[in-house]
Image (cartoon, rainbow over all chains, first blue to last red; front, side):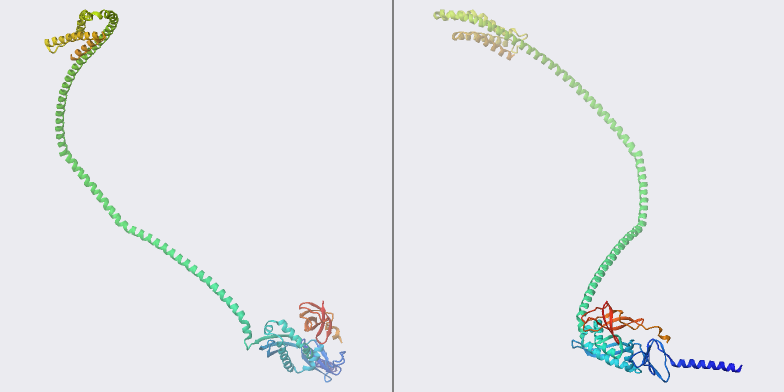
Length: 472
Length: 75
């Protein structure tokens, strides 16, 4: 039993011992490092000419005492560079850059790096710094300032061109080279920038000015609008205030006006009352004074008018009577005169007709007698050539009774003859008529002496008759 | 030993990469090549020295010059 326990303990101890040994001898490489194993049998790995064993990403058994193992970091390193150099234009600049590098993952690179930097990684940084300072200087020498600033591609290309071979020698890989800052003691960059800055500034100022102008315009427009709005508002307020004042004033006036109206109504009423009273007084006056007076006056007027009427009527009656009497007289006279005139006219006309008829008859007779007498006279003339005076006297004697009768014919047609001169007038008239008859006789004689025309004698009688009628 | 079972892909020849720095005469180009599960930058020259290969072009790795230089041609 005891032996069994001893055996078991011994086994455990052996196992622990073996595990400890393996732990001591088995080395494992981290992902970012390489194990460099050198010593017994390290070179016989099928890797010809390497002389040591490189283990990356796995474990390996290292025989203590016979082999040695070192670790080479494959992690990235960073080196900062500050270089004063001159560009291709001859402008001095200060360049501050960063280079990120690592040991390459290729076996050859690991071998190169292992041979140079194993256990001396501080040395590696320093070396890289120096190398890159030189390279950067030469790179910048091939570039212009503008390219340094802008052209990353060219910078990377130049970096590769100048440093690729060298880096392969060192077994290093450049992951990145960046220029962080370019110092410019001469102000070149500033001057390069100035035109652009000026242009940009000008544009900025122009834009600012334009915007400012627009803003000012808008502000002014807005201010104008605001002022207009304020003005309109004030106008409206004033108008409303005026309306309110007017209303207030009217309201204030309303009281006094109502009072006045009331007083006016009272006065009107009083006036009406006074008028009514005056009217009553007037009526009373009329009834008591005017009416009796008027009645009296009317009575007197009526009396006077009646008298006037009476007088007028009387006068009228008188006038009428006189008129009628006058008219009656006038009428009487007129009728008498007319009757007389008619009578005279009729008489005249009758006489005229009688005279005409008689004349015509006489003319015819005379003509006939004349013709006969002419023949007789002709015959007698022949006789008278011896004794004409005797014949004429015989002729007149024969004719005398005829002549007197003709003279008395004037009075035959007259019905009543008013003789104004009495008997003397009568005898005068007769004398005249007779004288006319005798004158006619003597005239006849003359006539017969000259041409023996009997019609002339008749006419001379007619003219004497018309003269006598005119005198009547 | 059993540790050798998983081979590490550390070859570049025959791979297709992408140009990240212009390949031109007189310049050292740069090509990104997938390797070891990641990608690494290699210094690159054109197989034909007169060729110019612009950035972004795909290239075929034809030759490998250890430790970190390749010759490529447009793919």
